[in-house]
Image (cartoon, rainbow, N blue to C red; front, side, top):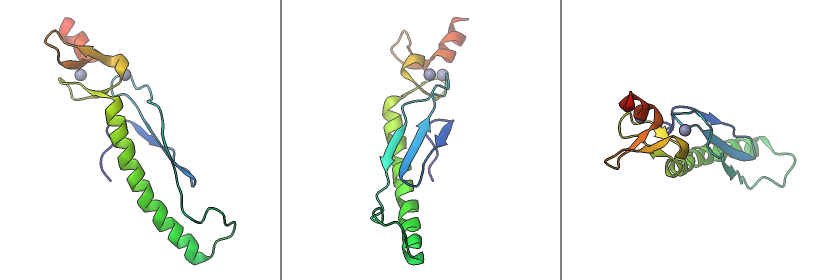
Length: 113
Ligand SMILES: [Zn+2]
Ligand SMILES: [Zn+2]
């Protein structure tokens, strides 16, 4: 499993949906949740045989991994990377330096003090 884009991240996946939540490295506020439906093909059935259960678990694990990778990619688009400390930061924490580089609020405060 690849590392999460942000330092803090929560996996809220259920049996029906893959749900991931990422948090800004700077202010810790959560981004919009990334949600994807899990379509196993067994959805309509109420009772599954052991074989079907096992098959579903395998599909689930592999789809979960794909959904996680996709969520990371999407989170990356919503965030900026601070050029000083490397933190992944939300829109609110993004400060543009005098020379046009992207830095986070914490680094900007340090520069100004
Ligand atoms: Zn932030
Ligand atoms: Zn920074």
